[in-house]
Each structure stands twice: as C-alpha cells, then as structure tokens.
Length: 402
Image 1 (cartoon, helix red, strand yellow):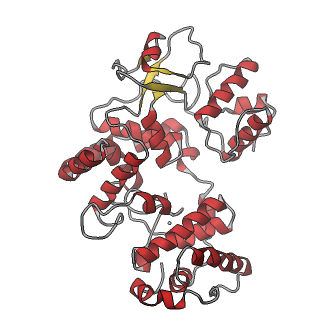
Image 2 (image 1 turned 90 degrees about the horizontal axis):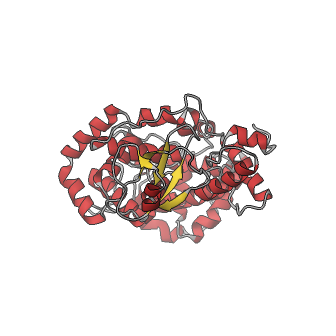
Image 3 (image 1 turned 180 degrees about the vertical axis):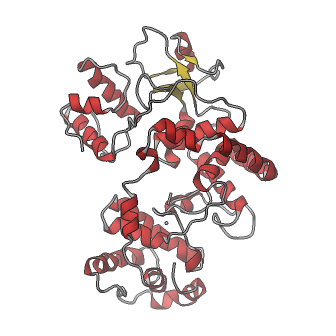
C-alpha cells in the first residue's frame, strides 16, 4: 500500500554476467554496521536468485533505513478509526461517482478486461479508486529502501525480505530506470498497488507495447488487476457479500450454511434482494453485534487476499456496489473503534492455541476459522457468540491488553 538512485539497467544487462561472481558489495553506509551486515547477508541470497552485482550495488547506492517507514507501521488507516467511518470515507458517494466517470472514460478497456478475465469491472474500479484515486495519487517512496527498512527492523521480516529480493529481480528483469522504480511506503507499486510478488505473479502487458507498466500505463494496471483477481479464484456473477437482517431467536453459533439454508433460517438480505441460486456463505459481524451483519461469499475471500483486512474488503465490495446503484448499509456501525490493535489480536491467537484450538499463524488478522473458535469460547463464557474479537473477550479470557 506501499514503496531510487543512479544507474541505467542497460548497463546491468550489458555487464551483469561479468561481475556476478565478485564478492559481496560493501554498502556506502558503513557508518551503520548493523544495516551493513543485513545488506551483506542479503547479497548471498540475491546472488543465488540471479541478481547481478551491478543491479544489487545500484539498488542500494546511498540507501539507509528510513525511520518514517517504521513509524507508519503503527498507523494503519483501517485500524486507526472505527470501521464504519473507514468504510464510509473510502466507499464515499464522491468516489463512487468518480468511478462511474472512469468506467465511461475507459469503457472499451473494461469491456476487454471483463471479457478476458471474467471479473466485473466495478471491483477493479473500486480497487483502482481506493488505492490511488484512479491513478491520480503518485507513489513517491523507494521500494528498495522501504522493504529493506522493514526487513532489517524485523517487522514481518521474512515476508518483507522475500519481497525485497523480488523487487531487486523486477528492477533487473524489467530494465527499469532506478528513479522510476517507486512505491507506497511499504513497497506496494503502481496504480492498483501490487507488492513485488504480486507483480511477478500477475502483472501483464495488456497494452501490447512489450512492457509490464502498472505505474503509468492504465491498460496494464487494469488488465493486471483483472488477472490477479481471476487467478485468485474470482467467480463472475457472485456478489462479494451482502448485509443481512437477523431474526429474533437466532442461534448465533451458526456461522456457515448454503444460501438456501440461510434463507430458510430467516436470515434475509437487508436490501430485499434474493440470495444467489446456489452456493454457500459465511455469517460475519465485523464489529460484533449489534453492528452490521453480512453473509460473505468466496469472492470476499479473494478481496481479502488482495489486502488481508476485513475493513478493506468490505470497503472494496461496498464501493463496487455503490458504483452500479447499490444503497448504503442499513444497520448503523458502532461509533467507537471495536477493532483490537494488532498485538492484542496476536495475543488472542496465542491464547486460542493454548486452549487447544488449531491456530498456527500468529500474525494478527483473524481468520473465519478462528472466529468459530471465538464463538466456542464465547458460549463457554456466557457471551453472545458473534465471533467478534472484542476487548471484552480478552478481559474474560484473562489476556492483558496493550
């Protein structure tokens, strides 16, 4: 969501194989021995992955850790404000109207992408609008510096170290001028914000000019996003989800059912629409009861794969709906922020593992399987089993909040 210097990659192409076997380069930032050690150790893996000495030295010329990046790790917008306020600001009437205008401007492109990848244009437009305001917001960060900062600081270091190595490979293989290799603060690149691995896996040359340019080439950015969603399992014609109303006497332990069963149980779409003819959905209360409840589908999980945040996925889905006539949510959102800080969610995940539940990843995002574990504990504690990771639940489980 999220990451510049001196040489041309034509030089890399010409001389990379000659110098590749040379010893590890010495960073010019010798005054920071810890960071120098990190760079030296990184070179070994970079060289093993086919990154030349020229590329590596050019990429890290003048690079030092960026303290601004570390500060931003604690200021995630989807966690810093109440979810309802976050969704309302991103899925706004103004942004939806702009999306409609952009669809008209690029209609032939969206028709081609929709035909090829079987992904509705409104979801691609929603991602484009939310990530860079339809390309008007330009990245200004250096992805090499940002990713190196995060990996060196051991903030999800395995993930960001791997992304850094892929970023170096992109810089080399795509023959990108160093000063044009830009990203958001955490390394996400281009008009729809691909992390380096996403670029490697999904970026395509949709314009046919021989380059994969998701920074300045709208067809490449839009086509690559359609390719991403398609390959992650998008199902054309299936809603991402929809707000629902819950009948009196409902057993909140119930979280998974077919659409037909949800209808039979009296769980109705808040917009009065019909359920899809077939398929399954998960009942989800992102802020807990009495906040809005949703039945979410397989496509919701694809949106969350794009950005592992429920607030983000709901905002993308809702903005896409608003662009083609959908109404605002009916149930009021809580005015206070009910999303636990990341460290508290990690503490909860560890506690669930201690209690015998199958939790092996302690990284903060609460999975839907973990929400079912939470429901089981809420039943034991005499709480309403809505599956929401709340501060009250932490207190009842004896988890010290941070």
